[in-house]
Structures are given as C-alpha cells and as structure tokens.
Amino acid sequence: MVENSGSKIFYQDRSIVTPGDLIAEGEFQVPWSPYFYKIGNKYYSAITGLLSVKEGNIFEVIPLEGQRYYPRIGDTVIGLIEDIEIYGWVVDIKSFYSAYLPASSLLGRAIAPGEDLRRFLNIGDYILAKVEAYDRTINPVLTVKGKGLGRISSGVIVEISPAKVPRVIGKNKSMLEVLTSETGCDIQVAQNGRILVKCANSLSEETAISAINIIQSESHIKGLTERIRAYLREKLGGSKNDASAEAKTNT
Amino acid sequence: MMQVQKPRLILENGLRTDGRRPDEMRPIKIELGVLKNADGSAIFEMGNTKVLAAVYGPKEMHPRHLALPDRASLRVRYHMTPFSTDERKNPAPSRREIELSKVIREALESTVLTELFPRTVIDVFMEVLQADAGTRLVSLMAASMALADAGIPLRDLIAGVAVGKADGIIVLDLNEPEDMWGEADMPVAMLPSLGQVALLQLNGDMTPEEFRKGLELAQKGINIIYNLQKDALRKKYAEYKEE
Image (tube, rainbow over all chains, first blue to last red):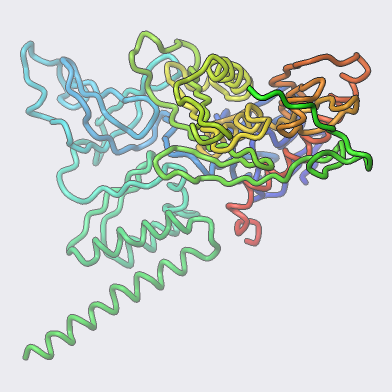
C-alpha cells in the first residue's frame, strides 16, 4: 500500500486486479486508459490485469486478457488490406474497428480520377503503418509516412494476442533483444499483436516463430527471458552441430 | 397433467428438501475459457444448474444502421437446450426465453463500459445445459465471467442469488421444488463493489419485513459468490504473484 498526502493505492506493485476492484482513492495524475474508471475520487479496475505501481504515485493497469487491439495514436501497427475504396484502403488491424489508409498518404499526392489503387496495394497485402488519428467518433486512420513504413514485401507475420505484446518486447526490450541477437533475425513487433519476422534462413525463422509462440503461451511464468535464451541456443546451436555432423557423414 | 400434492419444503429438523440450512447456498463451480472460438467463455454451475456462456466482440455492427453512435450495443441470447429439463424442451425460443434475454441484457448493460466502443456490437450467448431453478442468475453470472474472460472492460462482475419463502421461512438460493411450491421467489443480482443492484424481480408475495430480511440474506450470499468469481479470474495467473 502506498500512502501519499491523503491519496492511497490499495494494492502492491504487480498484483492482479479483477473488474470492480478498488485500486486507489484520492487525486492522481494518471493518463486515461480504458482499463480503469473513476467514480468521484475512487479508481476501480475494469478488467483482469496486472497493476503496476510506479514511483511518484502513478499506477497503470496492464491487461492480461483481450483478443483485440485498442487503437492509440502514434502506435505502430501491422495491417492487412481488407478492401479497396475510391480514395484509400480499408485495413484490418485486429481492432474492433477497421482502419482506413488514405491513398494520398501512400502516394504523397492526390489521386488522379479513375486511377486503380489495386496497383499499389492489393487485398491480402500487409502494411506497416502508424495510427494517425483515432477517437470515439471516427475509425482509426493510418499513415505510412515515416521511415520503414509501407508495404511489407518480405518476411513472415506471426499473430499473437495484443495483450501479450509487452511480454514479447520485455522490460527495456530485453526479450526482443534476446530474440534478435540469438536468431539473427530482424523482428518488428507491432502494437496490435502482429509480429514481422525476417530471417536469413528457414531454420532461424522457424525457431524464432516457435519461440514467440512459447512466449505467448507461457507469458505469465517467471524467468521466461532466460528460458527463451536457453531454448534458442539449444535449437540453433544444436542444429548447427547436426549440420556439421551431416557434412562429416557426407564426406 | 397429473395432480401432485405440495410437498413439505422445510422438514422437521429445520432443513430443506436437499438437506441445506435455510441460509445455505448450493455448491458453486466456475470454469473460464472453455471455448476456443469465442473471445471469452465460461461455465457456471450452481448445484444442478449449469450454464455455458460465450462472448464475441466488440466488433463492427452489420448492418451499419443498427449501430449506436455513442456506445456499443449488446445482443444477448438466453436459451435452454432441449435436454436441460426433465421433459424435452422445444428448442425454438419461447416467450419466457425472449423475456429473460431482455432482462439479462439490461443487467449486463449496467456493468459493461459500452461507451468505450461506440458503433460496435458485443454478442453474448448463454446456453442452459441443465436447469434446476435459478437459471437466469446463473446465466447472468456466466455471462459476466465470460465478458471478463474476453477482457471487455466492466464496471464490476455481477453476482446474484435468489431468495424466497418456503413454508413461511425465508430461504437462500431456491431449488426446483421450492421454486415450484414456495410462496415467493426473488432473484437479486448486484455489482458488489459498487453496492448497486443490477437485477431484482419478485414473484409471489412477501411482507416488507420479509423483503428486507430476504435482501439482506441475498447480499450475504452475493458476497460469497463474488469472492469465488474473483478467485476464478485470479487462479489463471497465480504464478504472477510468486515473482
């Protein structure tokens, strides 16, 4: 319990809260989140989540469940082109709304009348984009202006639950660091629960994907980062030996 | 139909037909995430009453014109399986099931933070697998657990229990004979942390005194159920605490 000039947080850091749990009472400077709500000066949890209490009397509820992504402006997302309209594309971003990507954002100019947008992005293409605008009155609008954004032309997309994204990244990107350094792959984790994996060979690709799946299913078990490191070493190191053994038998 | 005599509901030793004390509830079992395809699901058992609930959404509403501009709509279906009762129940939705769907929807609307998801729809399906009195409350609780399992923001979990009057005595959590032969049946559902009532119906008659006593008894039962619900949600992540 943290006490500070009349305002109280009723739970320890990293405790599990369920809907309706009274988290805190008093005045707090906490950013708005869909995962808790306020009545008077009482803050209640709205989901099953992990409460993170930070210094300076700040708390945050991190969801443990949730199959859908709650859009936030500035997030990097991987979208799947769902439909083509006259002035842009309808993009699936694993949210409860379809996002919209205006063609001017991709082309950098207005569309000539009668121009076929299919030439630039077709249904089934993946794009790396940023959420440019979203509030409760409009569906999310995406932009591909920025470094590395745009159509994804190579690699594999792995789908995980959006609630597990922080786990795949890890504290200070520790987990992501392990994944990229051990496999040598280029891994990009988007906030909406899609991961782009680009690898040099199929073995490291398969290993990276299975490691991500392990993280997703065992995300709540302690010491995961080290176990993933061991797993990747065993898989990749072991198979290298296999390959050399095979080479020996061949000669 | 054969004419059956009303049985004694409270026996000489003060216990009920199934051996419970008047203020005792039936055993409760909660299971979460039982369906793979649903976004959230739960099985809620209370004695012999057993209900399966599944939640889909929030998702975009089709057709578009039915979507509400300022909040999510809830589509709720309460249904009894043909094998849930002694005699086969016609699977077509009956007048009673349509009404209960509406009553449960209104109770759920009081807890789901629908204003977070304008223009969307949340589908909630409940199937009564086995009926033995109190299906509306068990369905409601199953639905609230399935919503929590889906990670949909809720003001609070819903806990509910029926109180009634059998042979002049106020009893908690009615069973089938008490439901059929008792003098009153009052289902109560609450948002326990907020102290708000989400559903209250009364069938039969009670004096104001009996009503107060019944409501108090129901609240006691609700608090017990609420703790079981929270434990069920936490159990899945027990390992977190050890870190």
